[in-house]
Image (cartoon, rainbow, N blue to C red; front, top):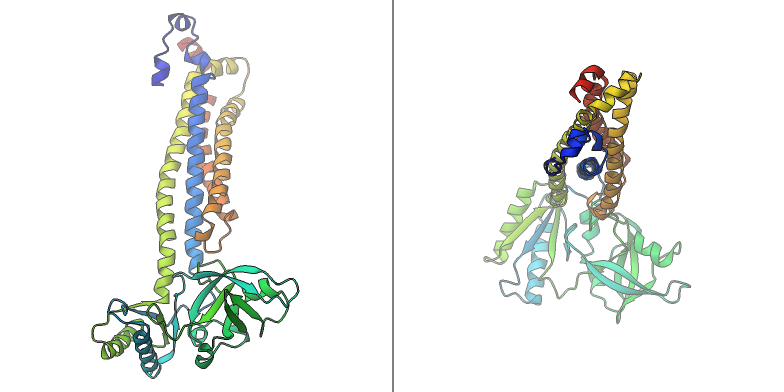
Length: 412
């Protein structure tokens, strides 16, 4: 409006050809485009908020395929204390034996990576003796002890885990794969006893476990390889303890055992439940942040729609008065204003939902398995935003339907 007021034309004003007759020109289009952009931005933010909030709720019910209660991961600063690989092995072995003998401790395992805390990646070569299976395949991996699967509650669907004596073998080394690996490498064939290789290292599959969600909640792991924890390397290993005791009790027991072995050691303990909360926290925060922005954007969009339609009605009061004087009914005038305001809303809403559909694909990994095109989220936003904007349009539309033609023509 400020820019429009600088367009001073005495002749136009004298002829009553000012804003009243030029409302459908460039300035009106600019205002409509601005409101359409507001509606689109509001739709985008509200859909993102709805997806994050629904994903957070889903995360509390998702089954990752392993136990989430009663497991504590212990980590030590052995490298900082100057331990070499052999010394670290002795320390971890003593810890494992002492904790395993403690009442209330069900099982103890060793792993290089904790769930939701990273993984290794490598390329393996499939046994070429199997027709059409000879290929290099990218796979994830973790170094674990044979008790890892029982401790984490990961079901073994075929074969068995490796034992500690087997873990010391090098030709071929025993490995366990997940179902995704077995299916990708051998299809319906039995994977037990088949050989794979990683560089010069030969490995033999002795077990298959269920595919779990150890990398990201809601997303099944890609082909995954569980390799024996190297006997001479314990510097960067986690000790996983599964028990019926509270996590604080497990930590106290573990600290007592660790300090008895090494008085200078510093222990870090965290439960798998806390790992789940840590994984969910960014999505929960993003959902709250997007909700706040979405609420502000919704308010701005509704105010913008109301302002533009109300301004258009005031500028077209003469036209509306003429229409009514020539026989137009209040209902037809009401529909006219609703139709013109609704066009801006509909275009902005469609553009916003399309933008949200594209953006949702980018955040797919944060949705814990929720469909990025979740019908509930998109439908709720469309109803909320469309309904609020429709109410904003209906107020000036009702006012336009009550225009007195005599008064409007006299004012003009």
